[in-house]
Length: 491
Image (cartoon, rainbow, N blue to C red; front, side):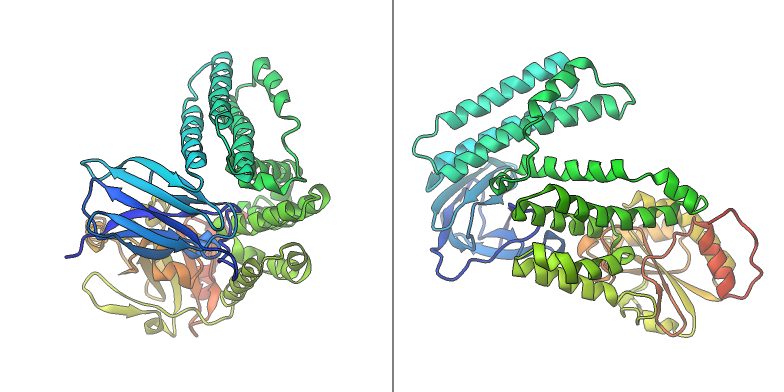
């Protein structure tokens, strides 16, 4: 059997959203190197053509008899590629060597660089190690942490100052990382140590924050090369959105219905994010980044179906004016088109998966009945919390409504054992693959549990339906089955 080295080198896109393919006419960017300490035939490189939500593309690079490799990568700007424990930043036309050293356990031990950008990449990796050490050391008292953070930043600055004849775009990124790393770590420390604990931030922390007053700027697109700037930029706009919306007022307007209030919040927050970007950000590239980030978070939070009308309106209007990259525009259009196919009344995407006996069970088998689908996994705690209520509904309505539980577990044996030991009821079937399972793509599921309602004609009632634990779920089932509806708490 061929032995393959699974070193997942994933591309951290400088804009976090997309990967631009190499433009014709650009000189080739070549990454070569070696893998030492382990025998393998191939090196697996993964990257994203557009949005990371689509999943990575896999590229298998052959290793010769002594573990050496060479490959041409699609790069037209300053881009970061990751290995498990190190990173390499490449530019158009660079020829860079990366030597990966593995230990006896098959884990990466160290990485060295040669060729174009070698010194810059050494500093980049060293500084990231320092920055993550600072981020992970949050137990110190405020004065001690500030002194520690200053010392880390000085070490990072010293590393950059030692660079000779370095690429200036790369150096600018390194210096920006230092400034925004300090801001990022300080804010994370203040939140974890005080905000989340319900304690007031001490004056020493408040005074220190004045150092960052001039860092949150929106007119320099080069700052997007800094992953720490991007993190702070995203957090800054999310915080402004949260501060601008009164959730208690939304809850009151919806008569205490938490879910309806959340839907209203999601709709308002998405549009408000775009409005804030329009009013505050002068630079078109940074504005485009925040626009894309608003879409990214809407999909990531599994609320795309709630926002389909806002997506369509903004796409035909300002999105196409602000976001100019064709790959992004086409991807957003494809996502909107997919979401529209999940609207109420549309045919439910068909599927067929094996049950615990290996028999194939298809959605079409249940035409003529209402269907309630639960997409879950044995490792998903929120999914497990819904099971008792789901069992109650199955007991009350199972004769008239088909209850289908679709697991996305990776291991069939794990799923089968859980179903048997927990005596799960209803129709239990398996779509293997975790986040890559087919059912996840069919219904654009970003997080589980997800519940789906289908009518007797096989059309969608709701592709993002209420959970078993919500009163309105039982009320709807009573309506479907013609039973007397019992008054419950406001929904």
